[in-house]
Amino acid sequence: MSEETKIPIGKLLRADNHQFVAGCRVKELETPALGALCKVKLEDGSEIFGLITNIQINDDGLVKQLVSGLSIPSEYTADNRYNRNLPVEIYVLAVGFQRAGRLYHRL
Image (cartoon, rainbow, N blue to C red; front, side, top):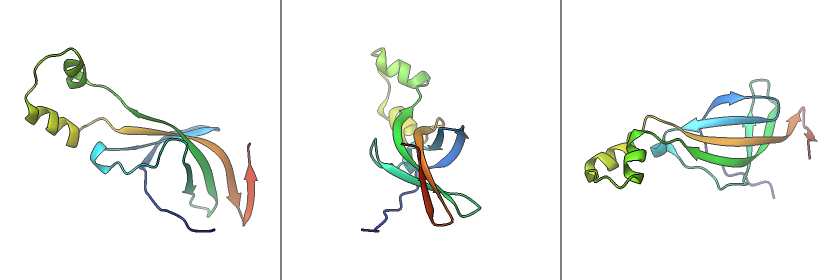
């Protein structure tokens, strides 16, 4: 079973030796589910495999107003939903990589 589903989840925001974070705007979000296996191809041809561990949308002033119960016009809410400046952040735990056809894991 070698069928792959290709769903771009965003652009790299930051990374370290055990995880990386991708970001995208809310309207670009077509993310797989929490716990899904994902793969990133590097420029040298190797691939990093990871598990999605967290999907986060940071709050802003409008979100705080919504939570406090203030009445906000529906146009503002819709505009914030589709033209949001803050990215959705998708956290991925690196669990392995493939280089030269050989698979290495960190499980």
